[in-house]
Image (cartoon, rainbow, N blue to C red; front, side, top):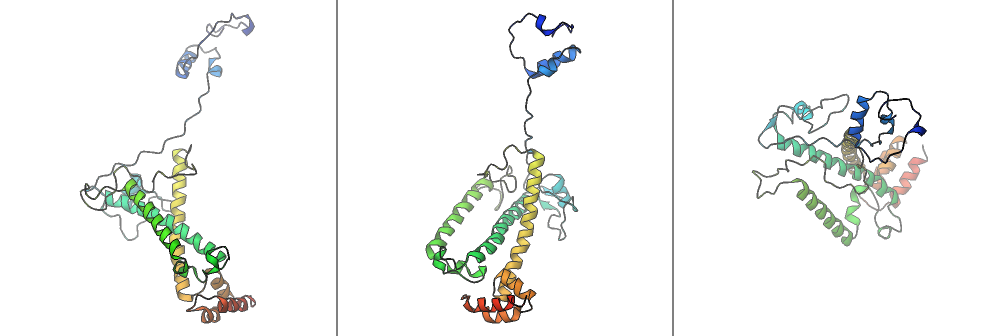
Length: 281
């Protein structure tokens, strides 16, 4: 029997209507009757995904001793081989907590912009001169593309940036008319979290999953900031596109390509010099 712990077969039991018993009650009954099988019959409850940890309490005027203290507080993350972070220039030494929060947030923001920019450099230079894009009028290194786009597109892009930045400020920053000083973010703001996830990538993720995802985003953003700085520097120095410049360098013909391409956004001469360099590969 279910309740007495007897060995009577199930078909000899009189059927009586039952109501659903909460799971925790069933568990208590099971602990009192070792021979019963109610644990197997208890309704299964799907474990809920862990909620991300609450943001650390922040207070303008309070300080972190160093980066290690900020990592332990959960404001920023370290990654192998620097589990407690690395701060070679001491930016986080005795830093105000509100300032540390702003540093963490702007690093994530700049990393996101840099990832888009690095991808945009490659994509833009591969489709430049295409008839479907601005009537094939945008050519040359990516650092000169924006100067060639139509005015309407440039204005539209500017308006979009203003709207995005306005929303970002409203989400994360304290009003300068109410805050104790300028450039303070809201105490409850988690760096990088602007409640914008149109693809639902964070839904159903555990706290550990979200921590891993955030770390990957941060590391890729850091790499992208270094990469986009190198892209811009190379194009300013050589006057030619990223990939043609690398290929010409391998062929030992970079100087010849530079001489044909420098100082012009017309790629006719540049293309001929590039073809000559590639022929030597």
